[in-house]
Image 1 (cartoon, rainbow, N blue to C red):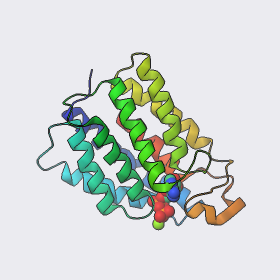
Image 2 (tube, rainbow, N blue to C red):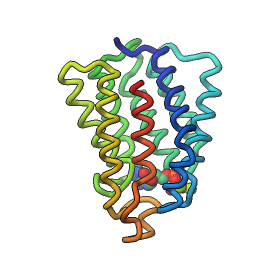
Image 3 (cartoon, rainbow, N blue to C red):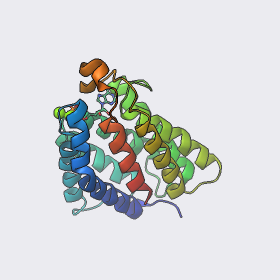
Image 4 (cartoon, helix red, strand yellow):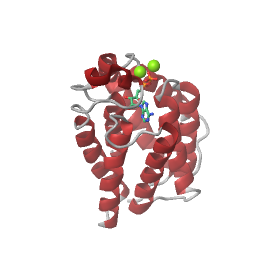
Length: 206
Ligand code: ADP
Ligand code: MG
Ligand code: MG
C-alpha cells in the first residue's frame, strides 16, 4: 500500500493521539533534565493540528505535512516547536506535490526532516537530542526502503531504530538545549525529544 493524503491524515491523527497518551511521561522526563514542559508543548501543538484536520483537508501528503508544520511552528513554542515544525516542513518540501508516496519517498522525507532539524538546531549525533533518534530512524528507513519496504514498513523500521536510539541517550551528557546546562547531571536520563520522536514515529507507522 502506498501513502496518500487520507492515510497521511490518519497517521497524523495517530501521532496526535500518541502525544496525548505520553504527554505526562514526556513532561516527567523533561522535569528531570529540562524545564518540565515537553509533553505539554507537544500536546498543545498536536491538539491544534487535530483542530486543523477538522477543516478543509489538503489533497496531497505534502500538503498535509505542511499544514502540520505551520501549525506546530505557531503553537508549540520552546525549542522543540520550531524543530518539529522544521522537520515536517522539510518532509513536506521533499515529497512535493506527489499524490502518493512509496517507501523510498518516505525515507527521503525522513532524511530531509533530519537534515532540517540539524540545520536549525546545530546538534550532532551524540549530543543527546532528538537528532539521535531521527538519525537512527533515517538510516533504518533507508535500509528498509532499499529492500523494497512499503511506507508502513519503512516507518516501523524507523520507529524501532528511534526507540533504541532514545534509550541510548540515557548514558549521554547533553551538549545542546536546556539539558546541557546541567552538565554531567544530565547523564542517566533519556532525552525527552528523542523519546517523543520515537513515539511519534511509532504512531505514524500505524
Ligand atoms: P524547551 O527545552 O525549550 O523547554 P522542549 O522541552 O519542548 O523545549 O524540548 C526539549 C527537547 O528539544 C530536548 O529533549 C531535545 O531533544 C530537543 N532539543 C533542544 N535543543 C535542541 C537542538 N539544538 N537540536 C536538536 N534538538 C534539540
Ligand atoms: Mg522543556
Ligand atoms: Mg520550555
